[in-house]
Length: 474
Image (cartoon, rainbow, N blue to C red):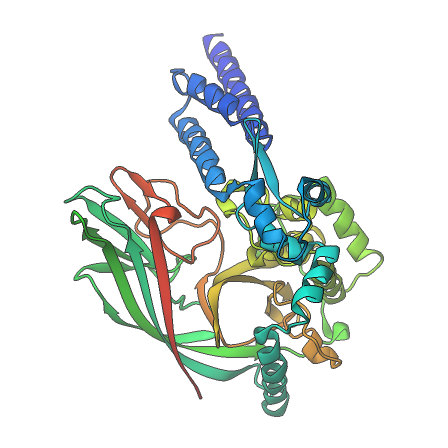
């Protein structure tokens, strides 16, 4: 009897805590931060709240602070930018763009704030604004697009001529630095740092070698870790920035696969791998109502997995324009965010592709690191999808369709990849090595690095990073 009563009370307590957490998330999404904080504070003092739940509650407090950092622009800030293209812009025009979700903003405790990148994003998201920008500045062609249009035909031509799917190898030397602002950590305290490092698992990347590290002791994560890191420690010195630096080399390969729909075989849906990579993975891979409706529409009566993936790839390319994104740790469901708001960056678009594929029974997974194209060095995310008879194939949803009349070139990034990449991660939201004590600055991806000290996590606004790239194409 006592055991039954205990289990009942435990169930009621867990259920109550779950309901309270959902209420907190709703308050945060609605910008009612003060009320959310009051509720969190009232829960944290309850003795029956489990320590794990307390950690989750404390992170919601941290999430609100991160959102505040992402939303710091006033209407005056936004108008100043927009008036470069709309000289007579006023709050009426802002309201118009807000209503169609082209100008991202948030009401936080009854005061409106705009997303830091909302003004430039407007001219990427909104067709009218995009047209207006062209009228003012003239038509411009992205230099990366020009480079790829010239480069990619050579990649798949080599594959066709040699029958080898890996080609165009490049030797890279990367010099990466993280600089922590002075006096963020008290003098004499130890700063713990995880820096991105080349992953040795993927077939497109090999010959990884560490050249130097500016610390006598460092730890390279084991090869089986999905987030590949180099860990170092340094002692903070008063009045001086704390600098972490590594230099390493590796060889990267381009890849292209000539996919013929008729040669795609049926999946063996009974395998553990198939089940794993077609499953939901909350919170970001969830078969929500929107995902089900869109996934069903894109599949239609099609049964061939490659052609379904092609429909998904094309739809995202045409309907989800690239735009600068919020920090992922501030979003509860990334693909859902992109469908509601109608835009996304590379990682957001990748997770949307993965989720739609999985809903339609196509195995798909994450991959990320850096893009290292000439003049375009930056953080970048992409993915892989699986076709029986071909294996795992790369996909870069953010690069999307290439401007070409040749179908092989046009769909190059659905089954192909250029060699200008640094693969750091083969999954998302995975543990770091050694274990990080405090919540990460980036809870989904790992590209910039992570910092902490015994007083807590050190967020992105307290440090900077630089990547120097040296390359030689073979």
